[in-house]
Each structure stands twice: as structure tokens, then as C-alpha cells.
Length: 321
Image (tube, rainbow, N blue to C red; front, side, top):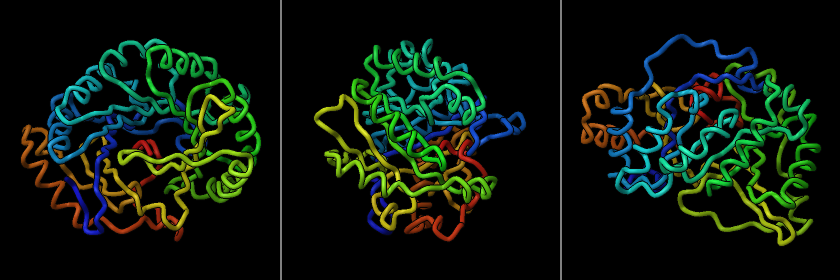
């Protein structure tokens, strides 16, 4: 079992397979993707990586980007993860613009959960925030995933001045919609410090408001992310909050990250990525295991977002959040 010097155990791997995204979300890539052509991890490299982590106790893998569905081999990637011995849950984060036609093959390949980035249920506001008039396509993707039996969670970045509308609209939506909506506090990144200062808002008052309305916290599984999730007997869906600026946010850290170029990041806001590519290209599972185990000695007790230190993370597309 992977464990750091603070006793935290790591059951969960977030694996980026591309940093390319075709949306232009204001808090991430407002000017669109500006990167150059790169050779992202191949299917064989992904297989080596996944099997190494599975042998070290990883039970859950989340495929991220960029936008992972832009990879033509996305169903093969999901299949490699799902078929690795020891991996019990395969998830993916996506903007869902292409999910309606991909939900069935992805589910057949072994996708069990999908997290959908969706910041508004209002078509005009959605287009403003994402840079695309594709709300209908995203909602169709959600329906398609549910029909295939895939667990659906929706990630919504709380933004000033939209937060009250976001909470109102998504709460009403959950009356009949059996999904989980998690409100995420906007996180500062290297390229978007000005946007952060004008749009960040704390989730704490909204969490307190929902608790006062009868929403109650539910127990978090060992491979779950950091969200506080709540249920209400009168609603089909659940609500949650991810609050990276809370003082105890990193206490329950249980995940590591790999970039699409094969670099290990011990934290979303680490100062550097640690290069695993040689071991991955040679298919050396033992070398990957040794590298990751040794590297964990350098994992810090916390990020330093409260101090405005964002590390190497220029934007969230780099690592998939």
C-alpha cells in the first residue's frame, strides 16, 4: 500500500491522457488551447502505469484531461484500466460534449462513473462560461450515461456573481435527477490570478444553508475524493462541496496524479512533476513502483493555496484538476 510520511494512504490515481481541450472555460482556458503537438502516453505506457499502481494498492483510477474524449482510443484506455487486476472502479472527468454517442461503448469498456464539468443550467450562462453553446449536448450526455448505468456526478465551479443562481438551479434540478452535484470553490492557478481574485467565493455559507434546510452529510468511502456530500429525503440527487481552502482539506488526501506526458505530481499544486516516462516506455512495472514509492517521501503535508502559492499548475487543463 502506498503511504506517505504523514500516514496518508493512496488508493486513488488521477491519470491525464491529454492536456488538449476544445472548450474555453473562463477559469481554465478562456483563450482556447494554446499548447503545441505533443506525444501523450501511449496505450502500452498507460497499461504499464495502471498495472504498477494496481500492484501498489490503487483501487480507483480516474481518467482526466484536458478533455479525455478527444483521444480516439478513449474506450481502449478505459478498457485497459478496467481490466487491470486490483482496479475496482474506473471513472472519467469530461465536459460531456461528446458523451451522448460515447456513453455506451465507454460503459461496455468498464467505465463506472463519470464526472461532468457543468457550471450552469442556463443556456446563455453556460455559453458565457464555457465558450460554447452546447448545454443541450451535455445534458444529452448525462441522460445517455444514466441509461447505461454509469454513476454520474456533476462538478460546478462556484463563481461570483453566479453562485446563488447556481445553487438554486442545481438544487431544483436534483428534485428528480438522480445525480450528485458538487460545488467546487474556484482554485487559483498560475495563469488566472486576476480572475481568481474577482470570482472566488467561499462555499461555507452555502453548506451551512443546506444543512439548515435538512440536507445531511453522508459517509465518505476510502477511495472517494475530498467532497463533503449531502442527501435529503425529498430529493432524488445529492449535493456536495469541495472546499480546498478549508484548513483540513489535505488531511484526507488519498490520490496521486500523472500527467499526459508521464510525470508524477504529488499534489495538484506541486512545484514540479517527477518524470516517469523512461520506465513507462520500457514497460518496467518494477521501476515504476520503486520510483513512486521513493517519491512519496517528498509529499508535503498540505498545499499552500491560502498563501497564493500555486506551484507549477498554470491551468486546470494541465492536470485535470
